[in-house]
Image 1 (tube, one colour):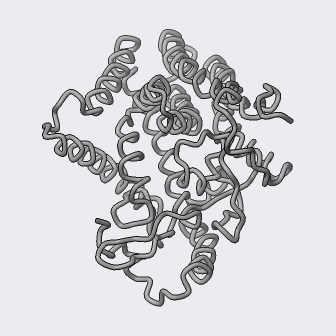
Image 2 (cartoon, rainbow, N blue to C red):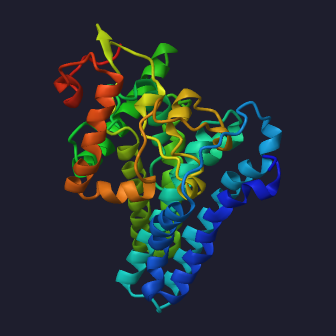
Image 3 (cartoon, one colour):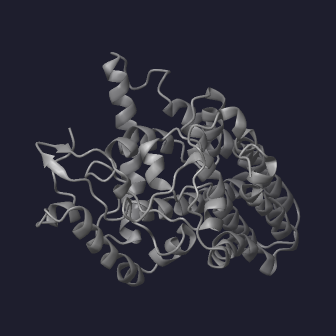
Length: 373
């Protein structure tokens, strides 16, 4: 099927079905609130089991004009997410049909939506050249109080992935419950320092108006004020609840993507170039529909601005493969003993296959190799 046909894009539009489910949960409450995690984590995992893998690749040289319907998904999602979050906030706080606990659970569920879909789409948008798309990515990140993720991701993660300088590269043996609080602080710090360093090279102070942190803070404060206008401090709490679970979802995926994969230290703070082997990949069809091919992560690091329908699949000879899609693997990551049982044999096989010459792995496991220059 030609890539520029709207019918070819339809599987990726399945994410929009979560919007009406969110409103159903807001109207009826009760067990319907569980529909959001059930349809993001479990439904697409079941579809992965039924539909299997997609190993096909589209032509990476496809023109942007042939990707209109793919781009439309990520652009349309921005207003839909804002309408959903704040529209539901207006509705549930103005009516009496949901108690406080139910409202909290509902907004935790909305966080799964804005994390699984919204932050993932912001990731696609921030990597593109048009300023309009990058701005939309900032808006999505502002709506989950995580604007600095753009600076951290573009200036730190892509440059230093799989080295001790990248906070987001999870270390061997590190549980998610250790990784999560560590990465929250270290990512914010590294993002701010990266922007400060860029400004200093231009002989400008960190507080110069060109620092994107001003935009991040303005968006985040603006959304928080909107929540306060709608429902006072309770509205701010619900908004923050949504944001927390969105970030939780993001960092779960970050934990999985590069777990225990390290670039070879060549000496004197020099590291090998990033290769497909430095990301965990999954070719599962349905979860790649949900995550707009995020699981083709090796190719994303090779070509960061390549749009999601053109990301290429790599074989196990080129990149390590996960046994299941990201939705299931993130759930496994919540149980450290199960995670180690699944992943550590694969990490050891990866080391033997790609780096048989390395005999001492302790500096890699403990991230004590010299920081990259």
